[in-house]
Length: 325
Image (cartoon, rainbow, N blue to C red; front, top):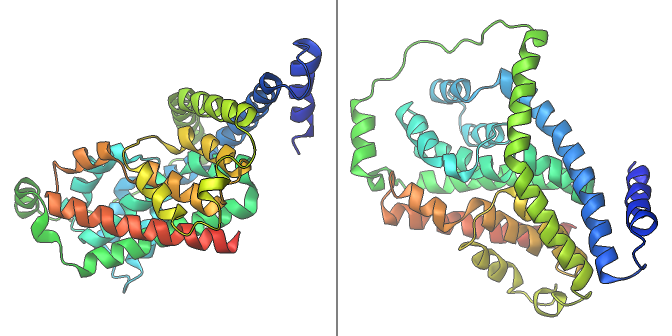
């Protein structure tokens, strides 16, 4: 499918720039050109397709649906699934959190949405397809949805509402449930396209610097770090590799666009895919900046419980990935 792109990168590096074959610089530059064009093309397509879906399922409708439907336990799965089609990162957690709990959605269901939304979105899906293929992408989407589902179910059972910040509790007490039914504007698909394309370009412009930087770091690692360097410390034989990778990710913060190209190189250098994905999930879904934002709406105890449950689920997912793939 991308043979033409492989030929283009080879022509640019070896024929136009006349770099020596098998040199570190040539390997790094070839990787950078090939991956940059391929990833941006795929991300553009996926963002546009997800924009179409999101135009029919805006977050207001999601909130309205979850707060009014009796789904008999499936609301966690539904909330987590909705999280995959909404373009939010963990930095959006505070306004989303307030909006959802104010709308009467149970805390655990809200957590299901917030866990999945930054992990599995149009950018992550596009990058995954480009870097790891369809099969791995499907498994990742399913694992991300299940991660949000089970995290929300566990957190709901713990009855943590009393650990919301006093300000949020007051907002909930003073708010009245909206009674109107959210209606989708009856707009034709043709008339939706301009706004969808505008949103697509906006998202692409926003992630472009992170994609370039991420691929650049990955290219340097690909060209200059020898095979087996990481495998020595974080290979399949090291049972502590997954939790170590997850915990190391917490001090960092990046979207999927910045960290996934690095994950690809880690895999090519010998780190098992499950371990690398656990690291990525930790970077995207758990971070100190996110904890600081959540401090506005949660007590430290609730933040600690939330992070602990999600961390355990990520570690389990990492082990399962290593077994399946």
